Image (cartoon, rainbow, N blue to C red; front, side):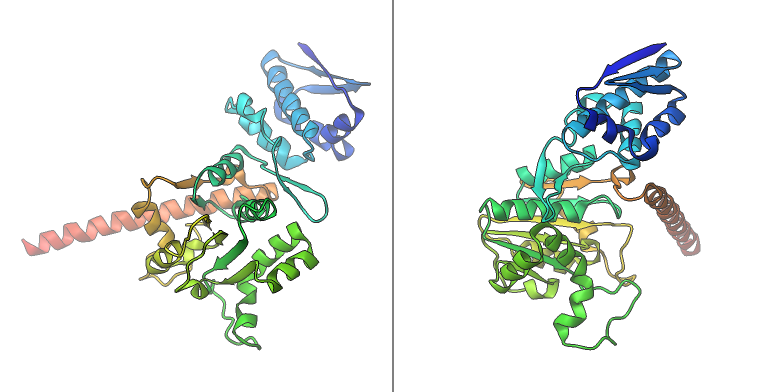
Length: 337
């Protein structure tokens, strides 16, 4: 069986095929098809079902390329996985909406359906919890939405904060004052804002007090009006800290809380404020919990496999702990008898 796809512009073909045709080779290998380019036409040949899937993948990638997305291995693998799951209709809208433009002129767009839903949730709700593994873009997209709101004058201020919890490392030996000691914790937030606003604009807005990047402890006792507030690494807050942070919200403000519940660095006897919030706030209007998964990882494909392996290990550990707890209760009951 053979299908033909007409392509309007040569730049779309170049984007689709990738460097040394690596994108097309990946599609050919995955579906066991032959993809040939003749001028403005693409021919796909092979078994009917394989040709159908490969054609759908190519058409969706061309749509993304038309919207300005640079097509690489990650995009090809993601579209193929979604075609296998039958999400063709949702894929047609992916990459069409630009959140904001970086200082280098690069448009920031949702790269996965999970990211698209996350952005939509931030637009519609006053408080959004973005929960997922590393590499899913939860912090970066939250910062992009904050920059968009700031530039559109929907808010007067951007506030980014993190709990200063040490992830198996000690910063106490570092020289400098308190701000210099906590800067390593806040560096990812500085980098994201600098990328979107440009270094000069970022520093000017910091000096004017319009952008604030500070440890969570600095939020106590304040009411934050007309602000877009992001709490990053929220899995390392305590329940008390989470309550303190959320109650800082003032009028005309928006809060995004991001975290990864598989990377809790709190001492063993401390309950994560993020896990606590999932239980306490799950049915409150105006608050939405968005869950991203390894399918939404937009870093190197190997990161997806690493995330999946760690998630599997975490689930196994939780099952063992649950079984051990049940065993102790049975033994205690037997002893009492």
